Length: 190
Image 1 (tube, rainbow, N blue to C red):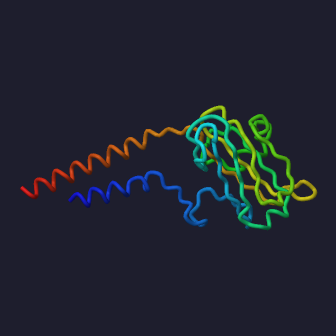
Image 2 (cartoon, rainbow, N blue to C red):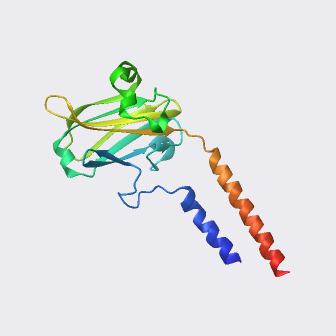
Image 3 (cartoon, rainbow, N blue to C red):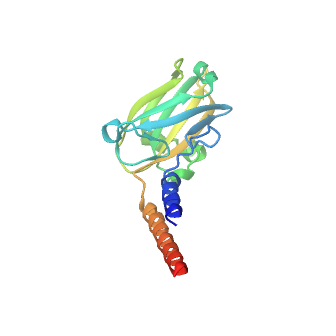
């Protein structure tokens, strides 16, 4: 019985805090630009040391965003990167159509970081960004041609200081199931 409880408890942290980065195929932090791939990660050294973030940042403050080119071909491309505060109200469901075209003026006002298109022979792009408000932000990465047209573009929302109340419900559910299981086992032995 005790072995079963220990096994269940040892599995819980991996379920609650899974990143999905074991393989590139399942990694939520992969940016796809056409057939090319890059890996997005961010750090909040003043607040969280070397802890890595991707689709969710635990608190507001200064972050260092790092993009590593998985596809070596990106080193030979002009890469542009922007971060905007979500003005669409769509959060995780925001797409390029929600940002550009008729919304270009709103998009321009919402930019909190803009990086001109340039070559990154090192295969890494990194920069500081101040995430001053909780809520959704959107990263936009582009490959830019010699005539400044967009060859490929990726839009990826991320959330700052998301609500974590769901974790308490998961933990409470786990405790209820565990206590119920103990009652069944104890009652069965009597």
